[in-house]
Image (cartoon, rainbow, N blue to C red; front, side, top):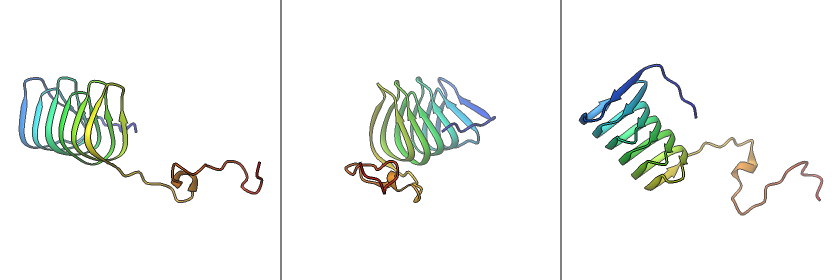
Length: 134
């Protein structure tokens, strides 16, 4: 997490974008976007709404999102956020009060050298030297 960008674009309250919208850098949405949204770092403010198929590296939802999110490195749903549709991401954070009503797939890449991270939840994780049993 912590993706940074110097470029900032804003779709302000009252603005409606209908169609395909593509943006480099940081995009803050306080208005409404419908259709297809392509970006790097997208923030949907509390007053914003997106009804679109979306592809972005980082998405923060504080308003309404309805659609499909593809291949996001991180998805953060704030306490005021409401996300529904279909989500494919690597990291997912939902704050208390945030609403997630979507088909979700989290594709986290695991390091094969860290075998304990790949164990099913039902198996105990071994710590210390495996030759010494307690």
